Image (cartoon, rainbow, N blue to C red; front, side):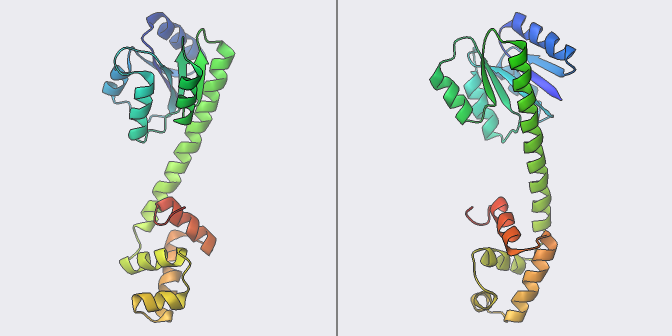
Length: 201
């Protein structure tokens, strides 16, 4: 697990790097949000310790940038002068925590621990969604049509009429698509459709 420290305070960056390195974490430190963006770190497993108020790209702006990129790296904000409104905005936008400087070791390590668990959950979700998308890509055009109509609540007879097929053909398509997707029930099929964005959740 890697921790990205983004703070324009060099002594703090150094102190945090030493502390977290001694705790067994791999650490990368950046003096600004812009430097982090230019480094193109990707989503290597870990989290971000992010100062709110920095020259150039602020912490909140970097958070927005990462969200737009669909990054799953959790963010723990660090601030010397954060107010309640700023904290609320950061948390609503998905931040794991909002810590005030000077930062206590226990509070920091607790926040990082929660952030790492959150990363693992998000990574697992993404992996499962990627696998589901691969399975969905194996559906024929007709199976995909039947999939959408089934999860909209239509009966086989109604789908047959809608598509100009026999009910027997619709049943065959339905059986095939459920097998390809690994769905054991209609409820599972609906959940899969929601995750794939085929119908409103």
